[in-house]
Image (tube, rainbow, N blue to C red):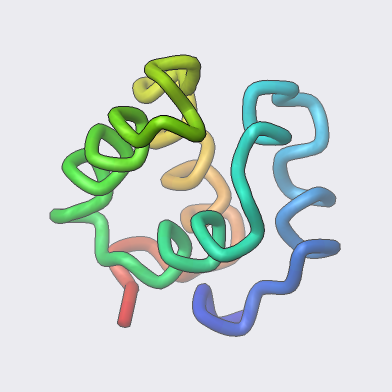
Length: 80
């Protein structure tokens, strides 16, 4: 499965045990999933500074969860 084609259901199935991911707005989740590995951490940090998140995202765990999901689906390193 291509990272860009992940749906909210796919995302939930891959990361259902990580409660902090429920903070993500769907448009932000899609943006993160379409970002390549190299830029993922920076984007999470940028999102975390937005008033909506107000530094409540666990940036390290979020990046790690996305990278684990990519490895499981064979889409590591992919983005746009």
